[in-house]
Length: 293
Image 1 (spheres, one colour):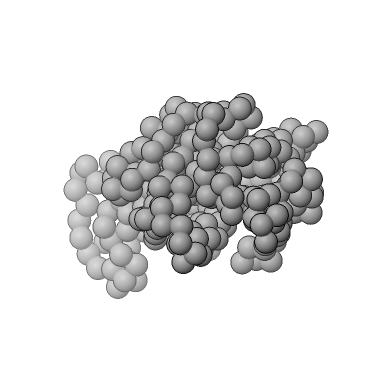
Image 2 (spheres, rainbow, N blue to C red; image 1 turned 30 degrees about the vertical axis):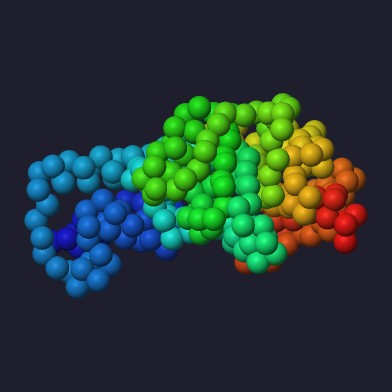
């Protein structure tokens, strides 16, 4: 019976994840890996697994029991209504980042209404490409670019853009180094590394043991290093007049991040909460916008 496989997986994962999360993971595996929906599981419908399916099921169980994130095991993660390919070369997209995408899309719609018909967008530190691709699909009139230091990450991002037919131009770039000369954008959006090294002790093993540390962590002594670099570029000419910087942040550093962006010369700085009420995003406008307004 199909329900036997679901029950076996749920029972195996409960000691590590707890009953609720184990149930969610088991349902996800049944649907994504074997095409069996939640209704079929509840109805206890019978379908024999082929031998290949049984082997795949055992392999999935073994990987999950060792703590590998289900998104890496399945090779995909849902984000903003789309399935993105993921690998250990990139972070698994989080729901909070969907809220950053919503802010970016809202900004681009405002720009279009104001007469900017082809705004240029940069996703700085793109990882899987989930931000850039989601923005490009939601705002097909925008010209979207995305960069990352990691070539393996860029390979994943390019594959995602190709699979979803999203017209995004990707290039390799170190956010902490000077950007290519002459690059100017109406919107720069970024979810850079922002977790302090000392915060590792509070994190789940399946994150620490499998997701790329270079995309997660910053030194305790310099937690805002990427925001400083982004602010320098944005205030130094990478933002067009009337442009905007939109970043995801560490909830512990909302006020500090906003103050840094203000000191850099950016204006109209706003700290915005996520759906859980945590400081999660900061928006800042180009200096020219404040002077012109």
